[in-house]
Figure: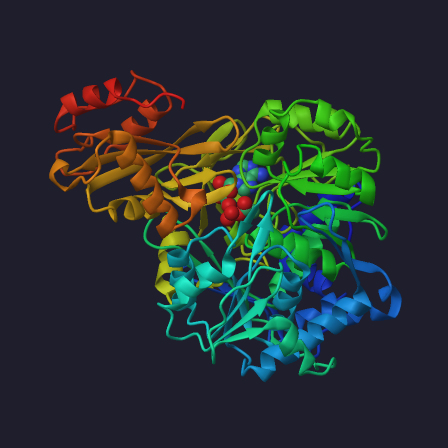
Length: 636
Ligand code: 6R9
């Protein structure tokens, strides 16, 4: 069935998805427009990783997001945009208008030489033009690579060059809360190191002037004047790449996760419809940024594929005050609200007076994503926002999975605070011990793996298929390894315990410890560093950096100045999201005799534990641990 309405439906569909996966996913795909039907539903190999869904099927995803709705929903709102500044006007796009805007911008891209398969980098604020440009790329078969507007020039340049993008889409400035991010200036700096970029198209989001580089930079509005509205969709293969999205891992630089067209389309639509129990006239709001996977799958593609009204918000939860989310919910009559635990915790900390001003009686379903939700936040969300009436869908998934994997189905599957509960149909999770044995039965905890393909799974890491294989398919032969630890309780419900690798989850954003260390090490006085996550009340995890410096190379007078400089270096290399919360200058790092940093100890110290370090017999110099303990940085 396309939509599960009760527990029995779930049980039937889940069983079918395991016993007859091809039949199950063929049925789910049939409701879409295919220019040519697929030959086989699934071919795969988890050893030498390769997976193909809907092989030789031909389609265009925007035809399914837009054209398909023109008959019945042409005047329905597709995107309702709410600006950062509440004094500015909302902008509303019906399906008909969005179809036109996407087609026009697709022609702008074509006019600027963009062809099928070319990479387009987007470094934009959360404005309708971002969604339009994403879809315009898909319209002509160009591969979009959206880079979150909070990344630095260096981070942007790295992503542009890795993807070999030939065009950059940006804006002069991006308003966010009381600040304005100088996207164009940052982009200019990045482009000094991006020889492949021929053109930058710049949206005039604010009245502020910026420099335009002759021969390279063009104004968005001027480009639009040069083109027609009609744009025939490019016919794509089901396995043609749709987009690249960079994400951090435990080693090396961020990798470009590649998603393809057919499977991603079927799975994002299926999960959107089912998890949120979306109904035709619902107003749906996901507060993520399109710079992350949640925005791709559940602001743009999933909702539009289903013909939904998707709210897009430019601002932040606390501007102009901590009631902003709730005011928007009342004003727009939002029925489904999907946000991150970090936002809930931040608003919880502001007190109830900001909530009590609002009715919130339009809400039917609440969702969370991005990191484990703690019990207090879950209860607060359930009680004060959902008025104990709205199921909370705690959706576990990843950039690599493309869509929601383990989650309650609103009103259909029971919820359990802090649990992502049960796998969706098509998803076969297993827990493995460190030797790679499947842990059977309930009441077990292990490394979360998936043992069968699903349509929206990662296809490759851009330009380096070996890396994809090594990262996800080699830890445990024959399984996709998620990097998360997980518990299956006595009732068979899944609870995500957090990362088991060197990835830190700060406010729902993934950062590799190696990536942050590399940035810190760029400071000339730094000899080496080790970064770990520690529990943080609002962010979930904070970044704690232990740094060894060379006194001879320090050009600052105080330790505080040095720390400020190190933090600034991280800002410059990655962006403000990677800025360490705590920096401790240490004389050495605890290492084993073979030179490996014992991060386990550093994690404990950062979390405020000063004993129970486990086996420390391999430590080269135990006195270093004592010294670190003494100098530990307390809450600032
Ligand atoms: C969608 C997204 C993925 C990592 C993932 C896990 C954590 C996401 C979660 C969750 C507990 C949830 N995560 N959702 N942990 N409960 N409901 O966030 O993708 O940015 O790639 O992060 O986030 O650790 O492995 P991404």
